[in-house]
Length: 147
Image (tube, rainbow, N blue to C red):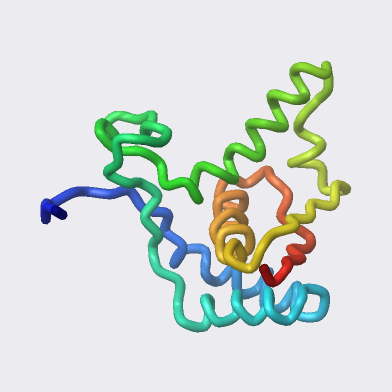
């Protein structure tokens, strides 16, 4: 049976990235993103972005690696995109290559191929995280299939 309890969570302040996302998506990708991707992003932005929880109170998942995070795990769609970068680092280390050109070189074209249920994560949340860090490139396109 569910139990009601008080808890504290950590949030990604998407509202602080709204101006950037509005310009980057609504101005920068109006003509080159698929209409359904652009339209869903526009709807999210037009509704006003709000802080998004990045932690959960679960007994499975990646533990929050910081003081005050005891008993909390990272929300899967916050940690999954970080995994894209870390897996590139792991691959590059094994192959004796530099990982940074894949994620930080302005001449690299980053494209995310996704399903429709992942639009918000790959077009709003992950780009806000990348922009906040400051040195990563952003997806040039995010084509999706309607499955």
